[in-house]
Image 1 (cartoon, rainbow, N blue to C red):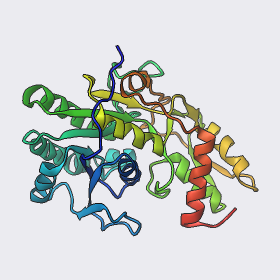
Image 2 (image 1 turned 60 degrees about the vertical axis):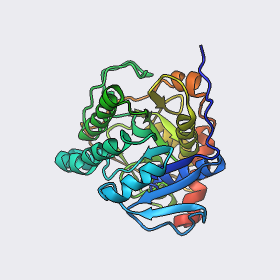
Image 3 (image 1 turned 90 degrees about the vertical axis):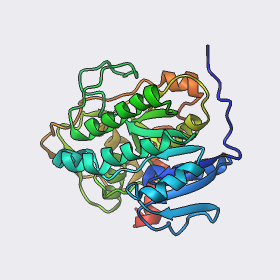
Image 4 (image 1 turned 30 degrees about the horizontal axis):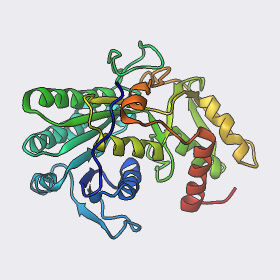
Length: 318
């Protein structure tokens, strides 16, 4: 039987951890439109265009007294805070554990002493590994091939322990490859933003390997909608894939980007990386049935919206 979402965000308080990041900033916009009161926590000061009705707290996950007080005030806590990328975590696994896994454990201790729901954003591409069916359902074996995936999966497992042993109310969303406005094209994570930015500035696009690595790209507005749905979900599932409903190779992405520019795109090809899963596409049927969620922004529309934002934010016009 299809499970309905019965809880409303009207009158609810949502605490967004990592609010100044790509997903966090877009989530704030969605939660505001869904009627929630928002507390935003980030190690950075409030962004210039932060809405006046958003309570911004400049702190990190290691500021335990501050965080504990905010958790007590929240109905839902969105854990989006992350200090690593797949490449940086692989280069420094111990640092990833120290800066990502350990702070998450402290957060779980606080949550088990409150009535708040946790919505944790995990990785849809790196936790499953290479030897799984594609599209990949939530029931597939997890076998990360890089430290980033190991860290995300470790947090998932600790959440599962606290669900069983301490009654934690938590939902994990394994998000594919989000893209869209407010994604930093220079962070080293997010092929679409990086490709568009380089093309916008007449720089060559770097491709690691043949360009046939397949990824599942999902527009950030659709990701925010899935996160909001998870906050109001009232069913029994605790794990959902969030993806775009299909996959594209890096060469496919370049083919879709090139018509957006008046000049041909230059491509520089480099050796492939062992940390890259060859193909990752998520099966989103569970989210469709139980969260009542599906992506609505197609890739061509999403690319146009992302390019518009990059032109406004970074220039120049092409």
